[in-house]
Length: 74
Image 1 (cartoon, rainbow, N blue to C red):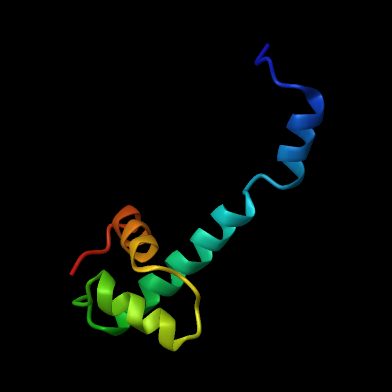
Image 2: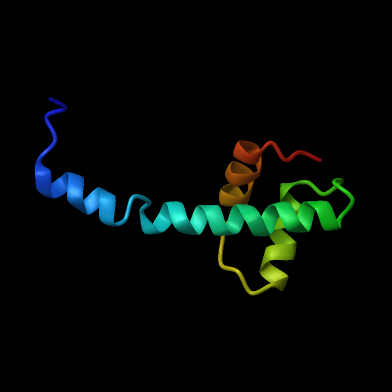
């Protein structure tokens, strides 16, 4: 019906989110926490600095993308 091979479907059922999507979700939570701790005034550059202080590896553009998707703005 959906033209999906059964093995692909069962692989998706076993682990529906990719590793990158799981990492994006985890880092989005960290970004949101840092944003609320700042009084909701930090932009993506300062949020990136906060993540680096927490020994997270990410680029400024990734933080900007995740913050934008989460509706976080300075």
